[in-house]
Image (cartoon, rainbow, N blue to C red; front, side, top):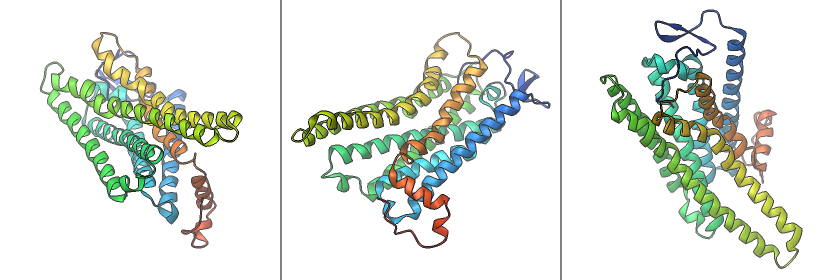
Length: 325
């Protein structure tokens, strides 16, 4: 993602130096720079490995090949590509450096960043829709969320993400002909893009998870009201609340600060410090690292499959038909 505001050029990134009024990688990196890149490289490796294990687990075990998990695979593929492409490009062409030196590689970096990040968000939105039908309309769930519907949802996710990235890219190219920032550039980067990529999916997810929580608690009270409503219902309520709060809370923590910055700071004349820009940008990317833990590691079936894969057990025999739950 990109931020429209220009920061103070004297506020230099620890791994860059100013050359001809633009950022350039320093030839003698400091200890802080080396430590920063080692940390970011570790994040990239964790992101790649975590999402790769998710994909391998679901595709290998036949019991896990269902429409719901195909959405998780789509999410994992988007997050895997973030780790493989966006992380390295963001390390080589940082957001702050691209603000001042918008060359071809910066545009490529921005295009992949926007497309894959948007796809990741839309996949999370589709997973929430799937969970809604599973919890709130269980009798019609299999009919409404079949393989065909899920494939269409996945294709729409990737198609919309690509269109948004192309739109922002075209707006950026057109802005090069303007003496000042073009209106279409501002609208795409600071209004239309954030609405389609973040605010609309967030509103949808908030409404869906709120409905799921209400229905889940209602079912819990109905089931246990005839037995031991006290402590048992309390445990179920806490578990449902904790699960939904973790899923949506971590997502909002990672993404909300960046999009608020993108949307509202251009309306003021305040300058955004480089460290703030970089931290917010990497915070959004870190959600791709956390998604495997939230949407896969949380489930016992994944932990079981993960152990079989990491131990190499699947290479010693055919365990594709193993019962994981």
